[in-house]
Amino acid sequence: MKDDRRTTVVASTRNVVTASIWRDLLRDEGIPAEVLGEGGGDGATWFSSGYPSLDQYRLIVFEDDAARARELIDRAEAGELSLPDER
Image 1 (cartoon, one colour):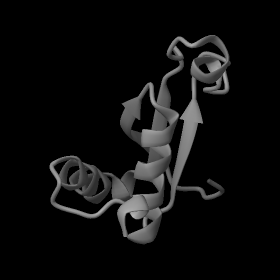
Image 2 (cartoon, rainbow, N blue to C red):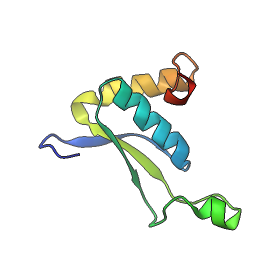
Image 3 (cartoon, one colour):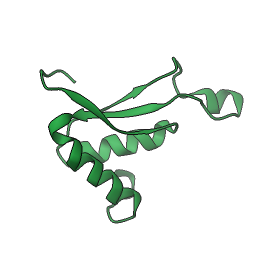
């Protein structure tokens, strides 16, 4: 995210697909968002080894978008919003 504004983590998960769905939801709502992974892995551990990845994926947004982003994620997780893959 190229901008002078400060960023913050609004959610984290070990599931790269979930992180990507959240990112797409926020982008669809006009909130710039990125997924950053920790642990040096690429999330493919599950597919190659049969075991879940220990990587942590963080959803990053600009600080001034954080409250709205958290609200949207919470509402989506509660089933109150359609996620991007459900539209």
